[in-house]
Image (cartoon, rainbow, N blue to C red):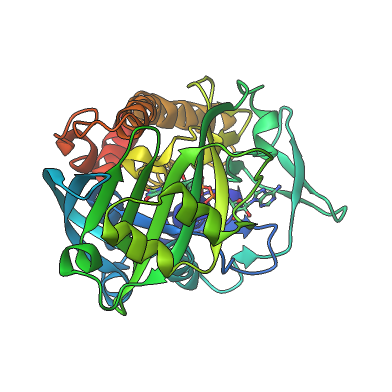
Length: 379
Ligand SMILES: Cc1cc2nc3c(=O)[nH]c(=O)nc-3n(C[C@H](O)[C@H](O)[C@H](O)COP(=O)(O)OP(=O)(O)OC[C@H]3O[C@@H](n4cnc5c(N)ncnc54)[C@H](O)[C@@H]3O)c2cc1C
């Protein structure tokens, strides 16, 4: 084994990827996930070129290609279905979040993943951090990665994060069967833009399943997690009279889940005394650039390169410097993506067909493994 011993809290997209990236470099890594198993509910997501580059480097390219749906274009339409703009989206792969998670988790070394372990908090001091679990057990490691998402408990050991900022928008999401729909709907990414709401669809597998996400002004009540169900008739009513393709998509929706969207202002620091934040725990973002998971995957590649290169796991000053180098590399970029996602949300839900810059080469062209190696060389 090489580098520090690492404990990862949360086996979501970011936590599972950092664990795999570390394991592939010979680091001793353990992942603690509160759920009893990989969740079946969830949503679709778009794996963009920047995220895919990382996962391909971990040997997951063939599994991704067998599972996901390649998407090459995005159409922006008005509510009546007239095309306003058309973008090349590069090498986007549509996937179910649960399928992506399964692919990454299946590649972890045997025994590295522990389900049913809920972190209650992390204690820090002069020595290695200590993770406390709700079942009364504890675990220690040289570095603890807080990858436990938007409502991270492990993050409290690092800093008091700014409050979540509700966006006033809810995402109503479900999977539908795309068979019989026009090719442009079945195979592409489509966004229908209305005055205060918009609807997005794209394929997520090779059997014709589409992810449909309606972004609407937040209805009364709360939806705390992915498993909050809503009545599909409410979604149909919210888009009544829209393009017949929208009506056809929503007619097929029988299970719809609500998620109230929120993000948080960028903050610092991301690490303290051997605990470091990753993914949504560090930089939750609105979904309007489709980058939340991709940015978590990028974080994973950079952090793994820096930690795997550490010459002495007992040198806490060196480990702290490596965690600071990770934040220096990642924080400016993720803050820019957070800002772009907010702008896109405003533009889309205002019915504008020119969201914050069609040139996304700065997003998709980032090479996280190379950035991580360069940061490690500078350390
Ligand atoms: C509507 C919507 C659409 C989206 N679409 C896209 C998209 O198209 N493309 C994209 O890139 N991103 C998208 N995202 C964002 C993406 O889902 C998240 O940004 C991404 O999942 C973040 O990964 P993560 O690992 O940080 O957190 P998560 O994937 O949320 O994982 C956190 C993990 O930690 C576990 N956990 C939580 N608390 C504890 C605890 N106390 N102890 C132990 N384990 C714990 C959770 O069970 C979970 O497994 C979307 C988000 C939303 C809301």
